[in-house]
Image (tube, rainbow, N blue to C red):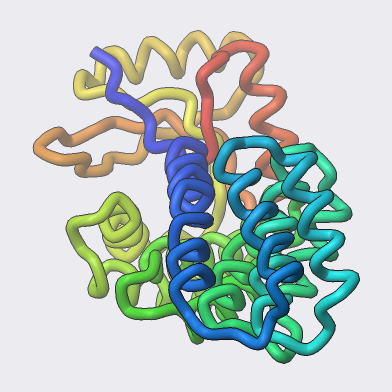
Length: 274
């Protein structure tokens, strides 16, 4: 019986949904309940922009927050408005505008809560766009600024994965260890603990994972007929010892992706290892 492959794609989506979900309510509470030097008109524009985002009217949110930002040049609320406008730009699939707004949200004078959230989203965008150096820098900046109850374990895990994709395998150990220790019960802590135990030094293409070695042998034979040189690695997954059928040992993430495309012509659910 096949064992479910370990795939980061679902975990990345979980982080994205979590960050998008918590983005607005905290801003509303802070802005509407706190003191500021905004005029009544400026406060109305800001409130309208945040409320529009909450109601998923992203075009209106961008419109109101743009008006607000054109008037307010030196208040912490400017940082908050830029962050939420950036989140609206993401929803509208305006990626370059989102990058610009999120960078603006980190400029002084800035609201501390806006800064770390902007760095989290900048890290996510860079990661999705394959800019792992930039994604790493933004994740480091986020972790250094977020409160203890922020998603630190997720950003530490992000750092580790970025190091791997930059072929800096030894450097990946430290953030994985921190994530595993910080929140061992979370999905990120569990994933990090797996990385700590594996101590990977290369990528591979995982073609299948089986509790029964005979099923692994059957898949190897099928892939050998297709011209692939495979090997088996045993890995403990929960209470099950899995037999992983792997292809290749790649230090380059790009090489691993190229091979993954080739393997998926024969095994549609192949994923990258580790």
